[in-house]
Length: 143
View 1 (tube, helix red, strand yellow):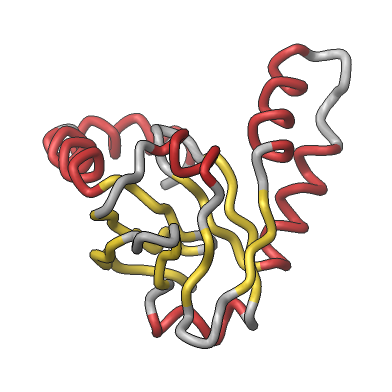
View 2 (cartoon, one colour):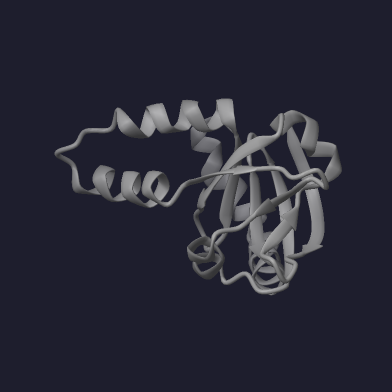
């Protein structure tokens, strides 16, 4: 399971270190794709395969299903960890998430999220201020 927040920098060669405590679980490779709320999602291979299978089973005739599949699946890239535990971020994903130098990697149980540091701080501040209301709404989902 991935949990916690970690600050890193994207180097001049567009490489990003994966937190050392998560590297073994990735077994040398992962999938990075466009995420929600302006970040990137990083999945270990088996989690990605499960998600991709679910997305591909959505009804083709439904516009929202096609759009979501295109964003998540066409935007995905398999990445390998180098000997220093870094992944290479493709330009199109760096641009999508607005990643420049400073990033935060947030562990969110079955995935990691890669955020621009400033965007993460803004999102986190706004969300923390609403967490009570969010919890109330999630009560209907059994959380």
